[in-house]
Length: 327
Image (cartoon, rainbow, N blue to C red; front, side, top):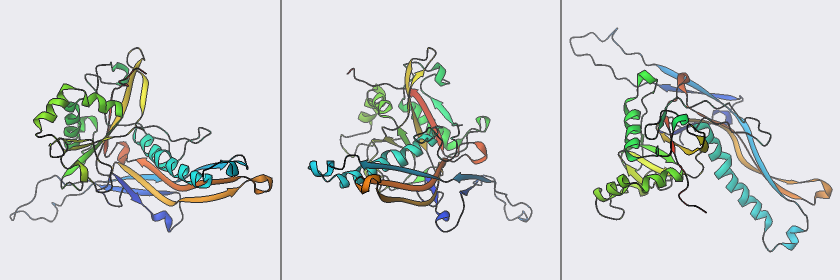
């Protein structure tokens, strides 16, 4: 995340200083037309950039835990109040924030405990690729798994775009490894399909010596400073594994194929409007204050960037994917 256009998720914090319920974001299109030489009068020949716009609505996200039985604090050998704080912190990292972002990136709503939509209604992915020869989730079969060639296809599509299919050119981001790269986030099942393939094994061998100097893994340790370590680097794409990527069990002609969705991400793929929080609040319930609880509150909004109704910086990759064990 960052406040500039070189970030995967561009953030704005204007609402920390002013009232309002939404923030506007702008993307200024890049110039790719020809220059003028000395014989051409520049006045009247200037380029005009297209400015795309999107907005993000903020909403409250909150979650809490409590010690349900007053005597529990006395009977337990643990510091239950610290446990509550640790549990809420873990919830916020792994669900409250990450689930919100993952859902929106893959076209699913982020909902509350009553199934109400938090923030804006999610928009379907406009840039989608599939494993193997599949053209939709309805005709994916078990052989349409993720391959290294398909990752290269995604990178090529991102670099050049496709006006015929309304796929915008996606700009890579400058990371700590000194290169401008794309980020690919995959479900562990997709990663295992990659690692167990002959193409992966051959690529690792062809990439050189074993260990961190192998070209498949070189530079992944300092990819972006604070980011977790990628599992591999392939053709300008840093590959990450993330267990919360969405899965499906009803794809295919017969509705019985298991699958997963991954994301290739570039600059300004997502937009985050921040207002307040996350902040902690302690509460004592009814009954003479016997019960102790702690909650986490955050007022913010996130959305996949869809400038002029088309995804700006992400490509969804949907492939067959299933567990590789029987228990």
